[in-house]
Image (cartoon, rainbow, N blue to C red; front, side, top):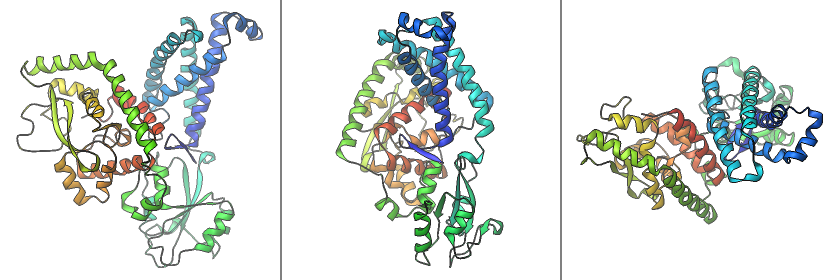
Length: 468
């Protein structure tokens, strides 16, 4: 099962985990106070009269802990790190928590927290989170958190569900079986087929099914209106294939997409309020980044010139395609040799020999993208959106990939949903995969989703994910 949070479809199991760990962080602060001041639990009320109420401090502490764990990908359905990687992320997230909490309490003195208490609380949270993660790994695959699904259809469209191989895509559901649709060629293995015996609703009730996914190759042939209506009235959800795959995988599957789904479906909102909030957010975030990152940007300029000479340009501008196909010059710190494209535009490669030593470092930390805040201030880009591509690549990909031009319906971004979900792409197949995540973002775009993407971008920057 999944719940919708900040524009994302999150497995219920991860939502439960976040609530548990938030509660553990809340209690950890109380425990740290009791340990630090050597006070038994029975005398807690007396201690609060002396120190002030603890619950606002515990609430702030718990919120910061959960946000930092989110920022390091620990509530991501796409997280595939092994136990060692999880431990590293937990420790890094709680190290950041210490600094963030100290900053919050400095800005709001009424919520002051003692350094000894904060250190003890962090230690307790580390133990609690690691314990909860160990328990989570033992229970997450149990059916208690999964929806049971019957797929109506067994042809090429239904095979899109059968082809889902990643555990993260199948975390929230289990397929009870497939029901053949009249007049379509069956591609699903025979052992996975079900016989409804003329009663689809009865079959679902016998198998304790929560949802029917309609995955017919051709709905004009024998569409089971009466059967699906009976299921719906019996409390069984009925979902079309594209919507189901969007919810479960966090992307819009282009190979099963049809224009009517985009035309009549929810999402793809571009109302004036959304545009105003987006632009306000972009301006405020750009100013904040410039204020914080100015020293780092200056050091980057010096490093580039020390490596390539003081006359070498530190900033590189390149034509990219923006909103509605308009061409603009994107700004980046130069990370390649000045003669990198003497032979014309080309995809970046893994361990690309054109990348300089300074360029390799700033690419891993995404520092090379910082000058794009000026593109954001100019209104050419947003902080969050599909990455802008070069005109040569857009022309090429638009001819070969359906719906590719639809990504030009929003401003390109410095970071985006595709950058969180898919590694650096340098081929047409990579472009297709990233397009599916971009379409998901465009459909579900809102301010809170943008904030969630920015928070999760911390994992990409700090851990160097997908850098090339």
